[in-house]
Structures are given as structure tokens and as C-alpha cells.
Image (tube, rainbow, N blue to C red; front, top):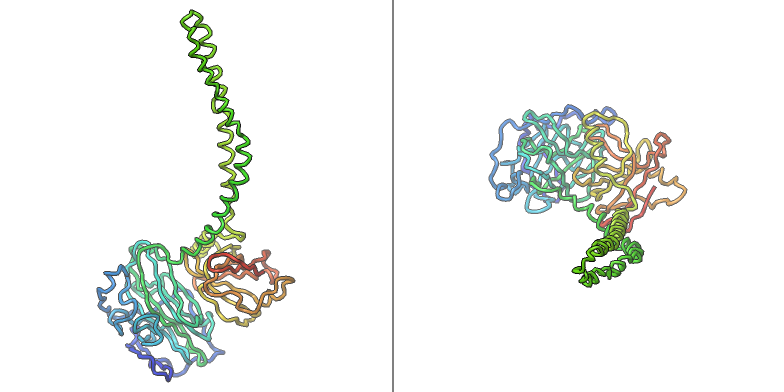
Length: 447
């Protein structure tokens, strides 16, 4: 399909025929009233018919992805995947001279999958990091920007992320792929659209890396423990040790003039057959100073400081959330779950009116996991008797947040946390969002 670019003339596109056969958008695009929902199960994306030669430029850096910045300027390493052409462009870029564009920045929307792919072997503790610049006027029900792992036949093994987002610039994403260590897959980045005449969806991609190591965003939670425990130990010992010294029966050992056994040398009369008194001083007084009081103070103060630390005023159990996510994926649970999560905000979307009201959306990076969408019913918040929030958005990229709400899971591509669900009357819990600065301090609670 021939790409249309803005009249600024800053884009240079290098398009090749899509490997699934045919890169042409059908002349008759579906009208909005007859649109087909985006596929979410048993998905298949067309792979290249011939493998490209991978360049060795990634091996020296430890990056399992070759040409991660698209600086080859073409498709000598990356290949077309799907049924609509992707393009290598010169603007916008995150770094260097080139980036990749999937989809179109103007209507009509692409019809099918448009993207690039590359065969990779996941390293031990593999972390995938990338930069995207995304936009759309469509919804996740019909179109998305995504990244996937595909098997050798093009079947989707795992969806790394799927969203219908407008990022208003470049944003960094990081994902833990350690569960696939040592396995080889096709790594796909692209968009899906169903040819809506009035729609558009696109994803610019740059600086892709897949390296061994810890998850990049995991340092974000460190502010939480650091902030709370540090003051707590200092606060705790002060009150507790004060009474402990009063247990200065430890001076009693100073009454260890019980070395009255020093008089024992005066037991020089021992030569006198009065050997009987020798047993009398024998260790009879010694048990008296025997450190009996000493254990009393030692055992008492230790537990007191350990009980003191309170990491945060707000609950956070990301590990439980990830367990629920795995159980949903495995099909062992199906009902909505109450969760408490915390993490860094990676993206904030404009508010959107749906059938159930006016909603705000933002995404939170879960340490050692992916991002999760947070849904806020702004109409429900406005009905709260207190703490009526300011106009949307009241959260920003980079904020550290604590969220309590209803975790729903339709499938791996459609899941999120709706913390205002209690407003419907069908959910018994009242959720909240605590919005903090990037160090998890100075939090403001919304409910």
C-alpha cells in the first residue's frame, strides 16, 4: 500500500511488498456501522516468505535484536510482516536518522496487520526495551498498536502489549521476557486496523533492544521502601532503648563485686583443713550474677524495631496481581479480583465518553511485569461527597501511584483495573488512586 505522508516532506519511506501477499488496501472499506471487531484469540500474522540476512552489528553490544535503531535505512535485517506494508522513515525519530512506521497517520485506517518482525532468541533474564510514538482516533475494540511473539508459522504465542493509544510523543517501554529464555520466536511490532474510512492508527518504533539483565523499570518501587523504613528504625529505637537501660540491672553485674571470690584467695586458710568452706564460696554466689538479667533486655528490644516499619500508607501487592494475571491466562480463575498495585505511570490518555460515561485512562508499569490500564469513571468521581477531583488529567507520566480496584481480564489483550467500579452497585469494594511524585512521596488520594 502506498503510504501518504504530511506535506512537510520530512518523511522518507522505504516500503517493500508485504510478505503475506498483497500490500494493497481494498477499494471498498467497511463503513463504521458494519465494522468487524478486532481479533483477540487464535491470531495469526503473515510471516516473510524468505528470511533476511541478520547483520552481526548486535552481537558486540549484547543486543539480541539486530538493527534495533533501523539505521540500516531499509529492510535488510527487519522484515515486513502482516498483509499491509510498513515503512522506514526519517521523521520523527527517537535517535539516529531512521525509525519505523506501521499504519497510517491519516484516514483511511489500514485494513489488516501492518508491521515489522525479526527472528530472535530470548536471552537469560531477557528484557525487551523500546521507544514508541503512537496515535489513533479508534478504540481497542477495532484496532490496536501491539507487540507479539510469533511461532514459526506466524501464530501469536504471546501478546507483549496491545493498546489503542495516543502518546503525544516518544515513550519508553520495558518488558520482562525471562520466561521464554533460550527459545526462538519472531518478534513482531505493528498495528491492526479494519479499514475504517474515517479512522487512522499508527505506531512509530525506534531503539529496540533485547538484553540479559533485570527489568529496567523495577528500580521505581525502591522509593517506597526507602522512604518509609529509613525513618522508622530511627524512630523506634529511641523510645524502646530508653526503658531498656532502666533495666540497668546490667549495673547489677557491676555489683559483680561478686568477685568476692577475690576473698576466695583469702581462702588461703584452705591449707587449713577447713576445706569445707571452700565449697561454700564455690560458684554459689557465681550463679547470682550469672547473666540471668542479661537475656531479659536482649530479647525485648529486638522485636520492637522489627514491628515498626510501615512501607507506605497505601497497600501494594504487585506479586499478587501478577499471580492473578497468570491464573487468568491459564484459565484457572475467571471472576474479577480485588487488587492493590503500585508503579510508575508511563502514559496518560485523553478522557473519552463511552456508553457507561466519561472515562479517563492511564497506564502503570508493574515492576517485573508489563503495563496495565487503569480506568477511571470521571462521572462517578464527580458524585463523591468529598474530594471532588480537578478536571482530567489529574495524573501525569512519571507519577508514582497506588491503585486499589477491580481487576478484569477478558483476554491478554483486553484487561485492566477499574477502581471506580463500586459506583455501579455490582462491586462491593470502594477503590482509590493515590497519586504521588516520582519518589512515591507527597501523595494525593482520589476516590
